[in-house]
Length: 121
Image 1 (cartoon, helix red, strand yellow):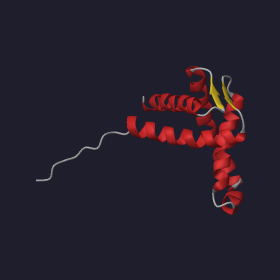
Image 2 (cartoon, one colour):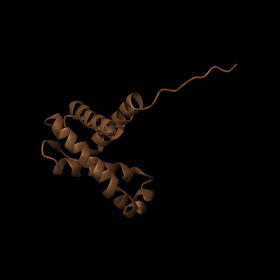
Image 3 (spheres, helix red, strand yellow):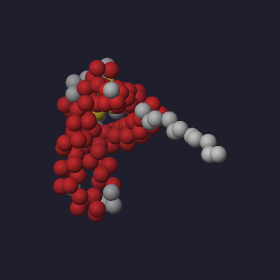
Image 4 (cartoon, rainbow, N blue to C red):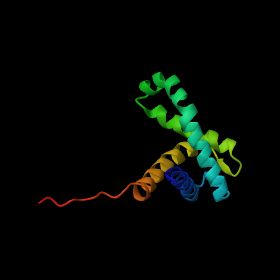
């Protein structure tokens, strides 16, 4: 159940990014669901390999290249899914940053269990 809720929140975050950035277009919530699924698969299976391969470049640029790698993964997902389009790599880098931020806020607000405060006596 938590996986389904997480998937829906990622799709909602993708819709929010498309609303806020003019360089990202999502046609429908169904397209956002597919794009969120593809982004999740890319980030799970392909990104770790590319992160390892580009580690020297990431170290040389003091971590800046990792943002570009995130943007490239976002751009690649935009080229795979019909109904989800990213207009360029710069938009993809900005969108990946905003997507990460919106996703973290939504996940922390909606899926984090409340803290139980117990009274000490």
